[in-house]
Image (cartoon, rainbow, N blue to C red; front, side, top):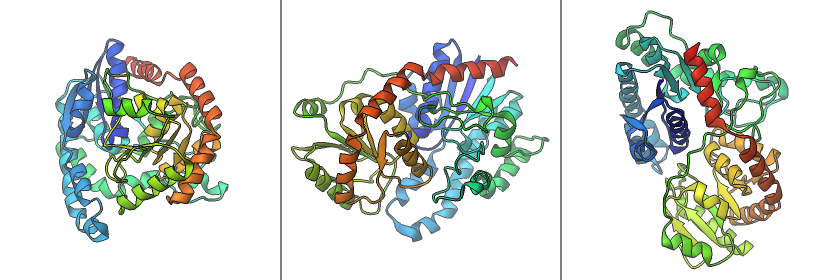
Length: 401
């Protein structure tokens, strides 16, 4: 089976698709992953065929980081141009021979490519966005609402596509020459279902979801032989397990202030720290008790830490859960608040509402009391979660139908 996987976004949006591609290859299939060009090395390190999509939208995001509101407003026209380039690259995938298309909803045009090729497609939604429930509000909603409005809040997902509907209509009609009605992602998932690659130990399916919407389990990358730096190994061997601090692809207006708050908090609780600067949400100088890195493998490092302080992206949440390390989550935006609440509800960590030295120190102490629960959840996840294998079976069934 030839499978075309299409994704976009941050590393957290791409890694699960690489894991799925690796699972498809291990099952004897021929996957190809199309993703922003910056992820070529990550994909090819796992032996997966790669097609580079335009990533100028992400270059623009990098350029506008820390530039303020005016820069964001003036960058809107450039963002539209960058998205056009990306969508055109996605449309070019209609030249690829495949038996199925598995796509991230953010790619917008990938299911149209499947229509043009006459093959089935299915969305992989890394967070629950398009399957309404009355059990909880849409993860996109940053404020609590009365339970009676939970299901109504899911209309936000359909609104996400509205600004790009004209571009998609043009692509649908003129570029791909489709005569079928243009169907939005929300309506597609309502009709066709989706692959849900998170652990039911983190978020089980509510009672009003269909059976096909059951979470499959995390899509985790197999470990790649990668020697950690001697500096990192020496630091870990030189004392008790440190606190991990990293905010992934998030940025902040004053990363140096965030860094000072982190340093002060670690001093207050008497813990060493490993701080990963990532996209630039935190900046500080290392010392004898704090090691500063620009990136690190979560799978390798987190099991060797005492607490993980992070932004609440579902990829990092999953990595920390699988490692059995308690979490402190300081959400920055969107669904991160939702996952922070879930981690707190299942007893695996705490939510940090304000990133000050005092609040962070208190949160680290509180999170340490969650360590037994975090370890128990990790044992359960390792024993029962096999998300990639379940997804491969679903895709095989879809193609065979």
